[in-house]
Length: 372
Ligand code: NAD
Image (cartoon, rainbow, N blue to C red):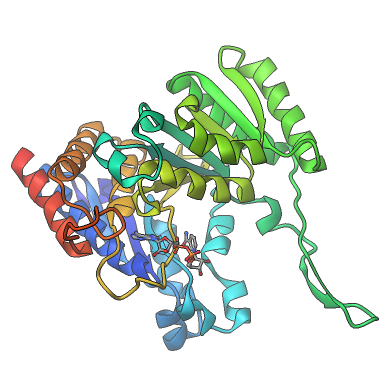
């Protein structure tokens, strides 16, 4: 039996749009693990977005920051959409998912891309292209053009408007995400592909030189290759099985992972985990969330695929909670549900009936119960 003090604290923040809907299903699954497997967790729900803004004037209110601060891990849903647009820019600039990532210094965003054999038919790619697709994109998450200064929109003396952003990386920012990715590749098939645009961008020239230097001095046993991002965008759909681990900057990782979602059958299938630095007590804060956004086109309809969020739980169970058996059990349950033919609307074949977000959650819980 776990005492209250050795329970891992998980902040559960659905956020906006379908984030709330898919996180509700993951939350049920975490509760199932606590109740049926003794997984030592304590869940604390917290709000994000328009709802707390209307009440408190903050997108991330004090109570949510408390929950985040005390947590070992955060289960996040999604941010964005019309709800966000109703919040004044000043409040959004003060606090947002981007600033949360920045404040927690979540620099390494791990995005596994796996083509479930049961979902090959749901992908527009040919089945032979999907054989053996199992790779990870590590997206640098706390720097780059999404955060670079100066940025803004200005009006020039002649009346034209000018929008500008800054892509910038320092050596330490490149080194830590490179080391993280080399270590990950070392634990997998030993191959790292660093994606950049070194034929055009100075930041990429520096990125490539620094990744190469880290490789030479610390990870000569890992096979390193480099690829331009335009080619990488083609390769992740032309021949995705060639990759083991990809490391790239913030914006390229953002875009490439949506391209790679095609191999997984739907953007709604992709999970992610983001890590900050290890603190003086050996703890590493982590945020788990699906790759997708708030999907305003389907929000509130109860039809979103919750599996991207649910598949972030095996990552949490392995990497924060150190419960590999629980992680394997959940993966087996998800595979069984997919093998049984259940599909949400994003994956369903023409002529077949899709299940709702909640029904998919029910099915995963039933598959877990059948194996407990
Ligand atoms: P999106 O990921 O929300 O949706 C893209 C498309 O994929 C939509 O057609 C949507 O219906 C579909 N989709 C996404 N997740 C799905 C799921 N689980 N099940 C079924 N279909 C799914 O991207 P978008 O439409 O470009 O952005 C909407 C908002 O979300 C924007 O405000 C954007 O800034 C924000 N966003 C947030 C995050 C995040 O919170 N991490 C990530 C991406 C986009």
